[in-house]
Length: 319
Image 1 (cartoon, one colour):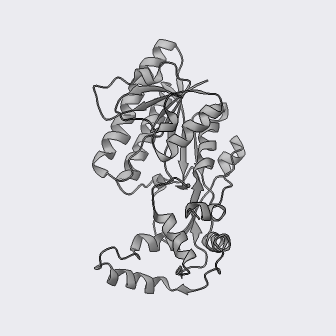
Image 2 (image 1 turned 90 degrees about the horizontal axis):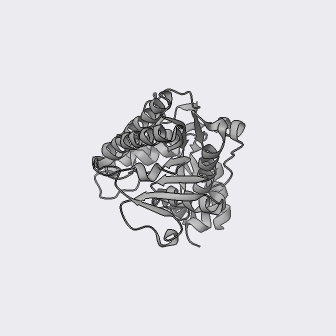
Image 3 (image 1 turned 135 degrees about the vertical axis):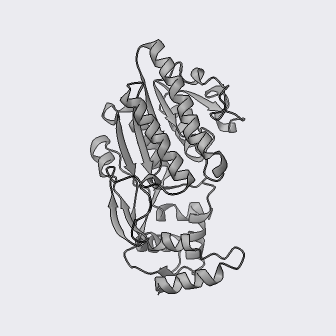
């Protein structure tokens, strides 16, 4: 089997490529810069940039059975439209040309985000269960452009240019992740500085990168995944994550809880201070009661996310 991957230098894409190679796939990657040292000589390389009209993307897809479209930009809003929307459209055009020549469509696995469903419409602490049929209400340039990428891929599927699977993970974590927010939370627990805010029913929305990669590979390999959308999550009560992490880190489980309104007042006052840690966004995360259902991918593909934050707490802090 031959798999092609965009975003192979990224946090999820690199782990995906490694697991595809272990599984015996021939892998071709699209890159505009040097590969990580661990992949050099192990994959076929196509030089190109998804944001450039003049770059020919067909060589990436010529021998491809499954395309894993993992390219994404988290931090620079100014290029999200060009990459997530324009880049996806260029790939679709290349896929259509290749499929016409070969006489059959390739299978496209699009790495998306539960951000497509948007925040709770009433308040950050509104309780809700989000399934794959939940209305799409993305907010923010990343979420909006990734959702548009999904829509382009599904439209191509409706035209039979490709078959597709859309995979929407929650917050992906892992020992090599560059995002510091989860490490900051674990560090606060280890230093015995963590306090709960507001509701006792808050939900933590994390999923380990290895669970996401297992889901991606299943979606690329199983006929049952064709033209489907799957959430993948390992959501749990926030108190379970915090108390479990405290146990792993050898400290007492936090007990202190402050009202949400008090926390928001403190945040508003402290916002005038540079790098004040208690932001409104962090409060939203600590009071959220959204659960993203993974029942569909468990039932139809047998994929079950099982790696908890607590079990990797020491590794995340390099202890």
